[in-house]
Image (cartoon, rainbow, N blue to C red; front, top):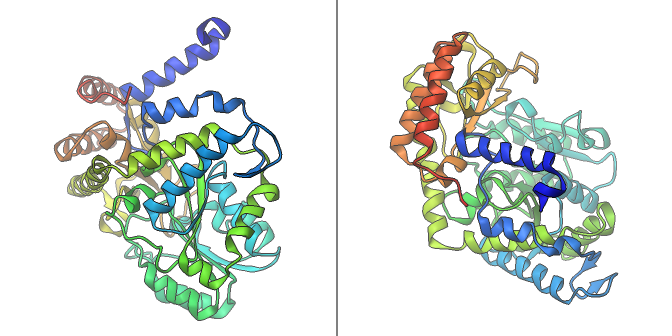
Length: 416
């Protein structure tokens, strides 16, 4: 039907499907959703309007939508071990915005990781709404080790006494000491919000430490390692309820009517599906393999002289400082794309270059692990990356790698 109705869009979707199928996706925030998730996401639920919450809607005809949303909530509660979940945020940034809306007034003090250290835009970046409307103090990693400087974070918190502390990162390859941040927040009376967007699937599978015992609120997207649709969730922990029993009500009101109107019910259904998938033994096996693959890929890149921020990884992503290679992140990103390998340019701690052409690249293993690749394949991939970087400016090398990748990738089909 789409081919007949809009052949241009149909063709562009076909081309994008081909690109995903024929390339190595190493962008750590990308993954392949299952066919079941995609079926729910593309279902007739997209036709329904359901402002409000289960049992309290502003439209009629929501008896089945209510069941879908409740199912998604209950599955999330069980999977992450929390007493409350809101599954309506459209994506990670609106979820974080709702937390600000629920807890703070404009001008209140907040604390988050410095962007070049691996933080996220919504944790206080000056180019984001969070940096415009709140007084932001930042903590960072040690530029020499690439590891979180907890002592510096504690000093900043003691000095500024933030009302909210964000912990969670877009480019930090190590395990977070949630308990230590919990103590920092406790000492200054702040809400501790764990943004687990990158780690959610690993946490759900038990291969990455959970912040639930120490954080008051968790926010997360539902794609990335969780391998669901492009949606988000906000969770309140038992500790959060102890600090403020009204947190669930505040969160609900912040999402609707605070910053959103009608939820995307098709996405809610797809979230419910991905949460069911994440509860299966096969998902735990998959999550363990993500970490194994990332560690092998990191080790092989280090053997080829790549400078890994923090020296390696404990999770799904790797951050590489390319300064010693004499090339920039954008140059390498573009060269690898020509070879059928997709990574993203990224700032590194102490970044001295523009974010549009930074010193590093970020890569990760969720998508290639979904396709069934294991440790031996990571060694091959590392070799191809090294070949392209060592022969920058020689398009024939990138083309040779592209052909090798294309032949190799046939053994690892994407979910259909």
